[in-house]
Length: 116
Length: 117
Image 1 (cartoon, each protein chain N blue to C red):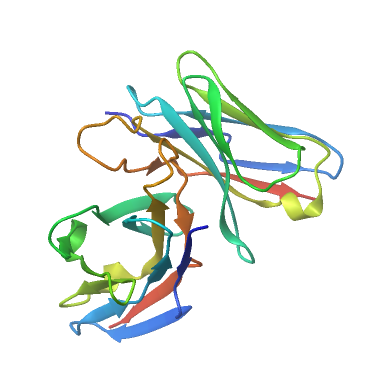
Image 2 (cartoon, rainbow over the protein chains, first blue to last red):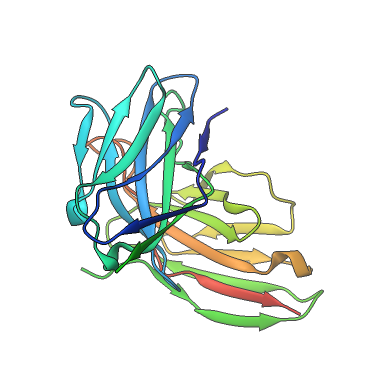
């Protein structure tokens, strides 16, 4: 079984400061990892993904994430936070040993609030 | 390029009724997945369809069903509604796994918010 943990329900960061949203995962095989963002009354929007290769992945809106296999983590980061980054962030994992299985398992979400 | 379209966006039903939600995927996408989002349970996988066949199913009762049509449009149905079925139902589309670009990215619609009274 695959699972994702987002240990922080809420993260508050001052505008201009760096931000980190934490994510750890558990899969039996090799993972595909994703970050999505959700704004109020909207669906989820894709930010970035890790498949293979460089452990540092760059995505939309200046976000990046670092894959750490030994710590089974995939933390989302941004060097300088904007008020517009305030939203609900979801980490997700897919176990690629499940051939043809498009199922993503999501974490419980982290609400990021950027304080002006 | 049009995104994933879900209808209706909002609806209110009473216990015992049934509801049908519709999802039109991005043109060319052949896989459609459905998720239920609630404050208490987060995002829960319902089912996934590819080429009119259900490929995977989450842990939901048989009251929840779906189907996919030859044009890839999908519907999900919930019968005998319960208060706990109140949720945001999200549809997402993607290419089949044979996509040479690698892991498929799900593109989500804005969701259908169901309230059961």
